Amino acid sequence: MFDMAPVQLPDHQPGKRWGGRRSTNARAKCRAMLPTGCWRCGRLLTPDMPESAWHAGHLTDRAMGGSDQDVAPECAQCNTSAGGKLGASITNGQKVQTSDMVRERTLKWW
Image (cartoon, rainbow, N blue to C red):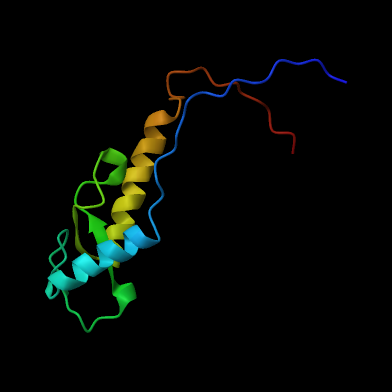
């Protein structure tokens, strides 16, 4: 019915997702290091703490070129806040700056 050329997609291969066996291996590596302090804040992490209280944190973020081999125990709060800050900085760096642009002014209709 339609005579269209096939769409050529760019050669983009997304990075491997973090999880599964790699996450399990990283947590096992970090569990062997306990008891130790969180590498970001220094809070003591012990083996008797619940698994949800600490994460296997990347010393160099994967988004910045780090590998899955450079992990260390990290408290959950530090890991989640660091990831959020990195994601926000990447996102905010990609946004168009509107301060230099002339904004259209509209009248309120109510």
